Length: 328
Image (tube, rainbow, N blue to C red; front, side, top):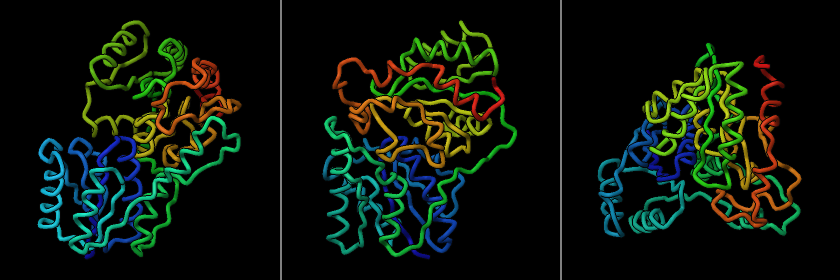
């Protein structure tokens, strides 16, 4: 059996997207084993994928250049791979690349399309087009090795007894997050029609959602109360998930649940729409020519007013529910 040593260390959503690619690769190449090297707390993303060996790391054990060399030596000794797949292409993985190449390992590196994305996010570029998706960029790495891989671009429904709406109002960056005032009003309206389950992480987010649970009937705050495995199970039981352009959108794809996603400074054109999710379920202000101004939503607003988020009306989100569901 051939062995592929693959690594992607962050971010959470990007690692989650690799899991859907691994699943379809393993089904189409059952005689190949993938060793996935990433952070230990991402383990549950890969639990039920065949032919996957998960290697979880604590990067405090591998600091600096010598720490990376230590990691590379351990991986070679433990797994003796036939191929190496760098799905990240950052400084740490460039060091790994040099280590493996000097030992004559075949290393295949993701093309993240940096120049394309820089052009896409240029606010003066008025001819913005869809770029290759991140999952296809992952798949290309394995295709370059000579393995067949055709992505279905469909998520797998894991639970057919679905009930309730999940809502994840937070994102890592301001440019990706609807105002909390609008999110609160949206939850109030939706809770009149369906149970609402609130998702978040960290002390501050948990405290905010605790307050919402107390203020709004028919809501349940799940932030800080579930393991990743339990969270994926819960999302699989939901009829629909509502999320910013954030990791929760990708968890919905992994769990097999439709997701309405809200986009501000970012845009699906950059290739990060949840796997199998419909473009029809994207909520965004289309006529702002400055969008997207950022791939990750981490830049200050060019206009200074975050119109990409401020101009979104919660009715735009409710309309997506009306189109395909019985909530309204």
